[in-house]
Length: 465
Picture 1 (tube, one colour):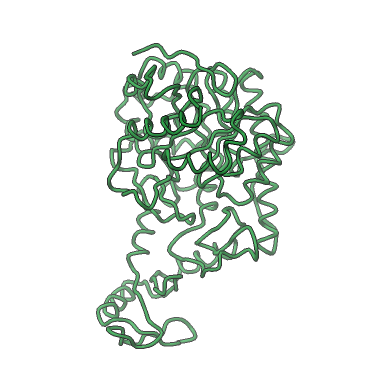
Picture 2 (cartoon, one colour):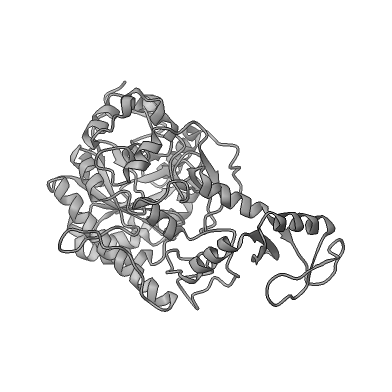
């Protein structure tokens, strides 16, 4: 394995090893501070970060507002307080010498306000802002206001070209690096475009080379690319190091830091990671963001698959094969199904999926009464955690609606991620992970249930393993 030397990132020489930001409440001050203290770049997630009272107890994020707008303001307040608490923790954990970035999702509700709120009060402790999940055109402008570097997360050279030409060329001196997040391998939300096949993964090397060529066109020869998604053993990327086609390169680890002493995820989650098999992490498109995302296939995802499969199209009038009247709900207004769909509906109702719920696409899904109540309660409790949510029809601008009917085929992402992060059932919640998570069970480093400290993990990574 080639020696991995420090490189210049955002104006500082650091090991080119970066902790990937993971919200909600997963990449926190303890994990980020330990990673920075080990010589790399730690990342504090400012997505619904936890904060604490005077006695050091976590403050539960309970919403009291009567309207979505009121709860949205509470969400932003929580986000700023939590972000500040975790940044200060990271600074203390790294003894004030570490390199700390913060991470936000551009499509999270109130993202820009949370960024401003944290950077206004802690800019001296923060070296950079990493941002993805959308096209963060204003990221460079916001970073420049506070004199910090910025690191956009993209999945293709084409996406970076669009960001550069529209906005980033104005703030080139603060572009600390460009994160290439592999859309087929990374955990969480992925940047698959409409022209890319989720079932036909492309090798990352040609896409990285394309990104470097694009960056070189703009004079960014010395700006590092940060490879994210599927990074486990550095020896797998040995040919990338000191490679002129790739240029300066860093490596981002998102999944491996989950299984460390400093990682805040519950113990049961850490134990589950050691049991995963290849293929247990899958891409799905149930997210209320509309993006693909990667998560462990568990009962939560199976229920969403089944819910979406129990779906039929209807017409308001008898048209073509839609001739069989169907009268759902209390109002008993008739719509029309095909004969085949009417038989399927009868079978589902016989299995207990008696409740028909309308979708924005002129279809019904069929669920049990308890699931219908849960969906409706979650939609009513929306606090605007996304800039636009297809599950609840929330949008954080205009009249606070995305203009569509709320979609019962999705779920409340804030609810499930907060629950699993704080001890909730691993089978009944969304469990994000990268596609390499099965390697925990195969990597001898984790034999006999060994859980390393962050420092031990970084030292291991530097060996190539």
